[in-house]
Length: 196
Image 1 (cartoon, helix red, strand yellow):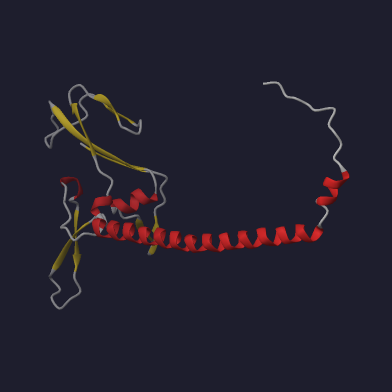
Image 2 (spheres, one colour):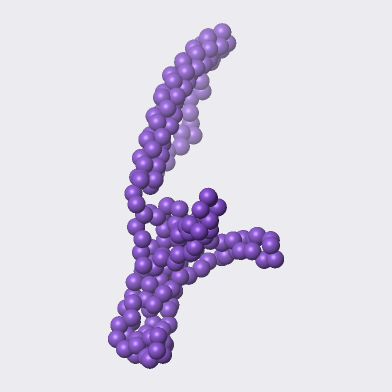
């Protein structure tokens, strides 16, 4: 569509110009528009309060449901991979009582980083590719039994990765150590746990 330019416009008559020169009327229009805008803003603020209240209530409901689903009182599921047990002396009236607790104890079992299971033929070895693109290279005859003889057949490899502090905390892996009586914390940019 071509744009049309009116080059020969008729001049505006003086009567029309004078009809719009009433400054009092302009002020009254401005006041009326300002009052209407202020009233609509007040209605908006009331609705805004209701909206914020609904959002806060929704967040509270989601937090409550999440809390009860995560911290539900269920006995923790033990896997064979997490059964490292240490003994600790109990300082009660009976000094010979031993308290058994897991060395690796996830604080919230549902948040623990799960293992991924792979099978590899022990006599052939192989390369496993994890979902994070990590490669696990298992050489031929890498597994032996207690007598030192090569294992033949399938070997199950369980593997998991810890990419950040949240993964490490969720796993329950202790990150403290003692050096000459000074307790310190390990720092890690990432870890793996592989078992065969």
